[in-house]
Length: 173
Image 1 (cartoon, rainbow, N blue to C red):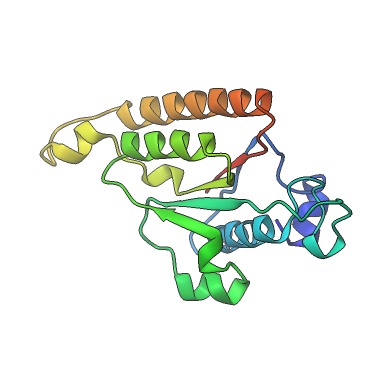
Image 2: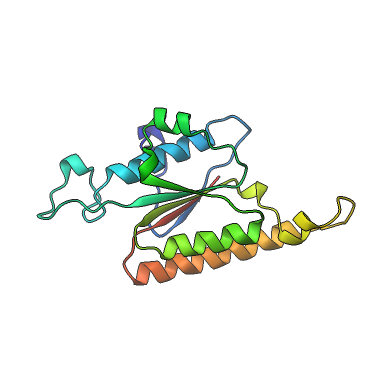
């Protein structure tokens, strides 16, 4: 994550080919911590997993990018720049509904230059049926089912990417 105490507590950082979820109250720094992780993706050599300035590879360091799915529409690019996330090191994805975000996420993970996928926020993912329907319609459990399916689908994508030796991870906020 780029934050020593957090990396220490979670055993060295975000797991490659794994999923991590940051949760907590509003305005508690979850997105800022995710932006730190985006910044770290840009600073690492993805061949030896060391900071580029300490890379021991005989070839130039391999660079990777991040994909930020801005479900809430709250990404502050100025704040991201203050944290150190360079605009050219990450792509911001926007969609209308939850299933579209899941499809974008799966395509992003299969791109061989994507090391980190951030979905901010998981709780804001809205199913297409709910998005298009009148406000008074009942959709009990539909969001939970969509999120459950999404997590299973993305986890399977991570398994495929691991077999292809493409290092990537998912961070849910």
